[in-house]
Length: 393
Image (cartoon, rainbow, N blue to C red):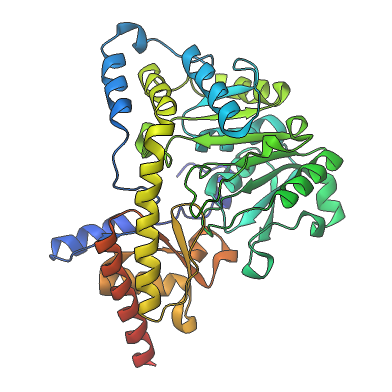
């Protein structure tokens, strides 16, 4: 066997890698499987988006290479949306970059800024590209556990001075996946100040900015004074518009950082399909009329799941944002064991916190990816799993 690069061996297994096989086996046995693992809701994209894609796909010009410029209309629409939503004025051609989903942009950012000997700040648990991008660039991730006693916030002031001196990127994600935590504005201000003081890029993953409840409106890091000097904010169409498989997002930030990311991408991709970018324009234009109804659907799912879990004696907080419920593991067993039993004994797929990093131990993530009745059924099954565990003891 040809030897793999050493960095390859540093990658942890990707979460849920074994789940499809187990699901397939259970379904073959007639088991009713409720999949609440991946953040991939069963809701449709806006009708205007589907119509825009169909129309654009019939245009031969849309089949040409997009390159990093992409569809000018999309850049213009993103700039208009950012101004209207956050009050942030951006140059659509120098401070915005279309992405093939925010995931690839987050992963590729490190290739522009990180090299051997450099460090990045990676929340644990957290999204895999923070770690993956760092390792691919040859950097060293400094793992920071995020725990309930700190409201799941990364305490940058607690970073050791020798690590801070080597830090090139700080990855932060609020509203947070997987914990659903939100970041107060004064915390965001401190993060910007820290990055400015240490010459680090602040990679602000804002994929869940539009999935918020109870009158909470997540801000943009670019609203903070001084952020344009250090921050790159990532947005995604996946969660807001139920377009997970469409692979479309964008980065926004200062001219130099956006140019650097665009240059990296010019060596690894030629941009998202132009017809999908045209669909993105339609999505942004439909935001005001369509997104509130979609958020209402997720809120109803959240309320149904939280109510059912609590009714069965499972302690859980109601998230103010995102599409996840972060539940303490009942009975104190390892999260991977509980999630495995939930699947094989009860046919419910959930994400063990440990699969998202050692800092996630003690919790499981439940995604709001199906309707209220199915979520209520899943809650009763998860409670039954707890009862069986305690009985066995």
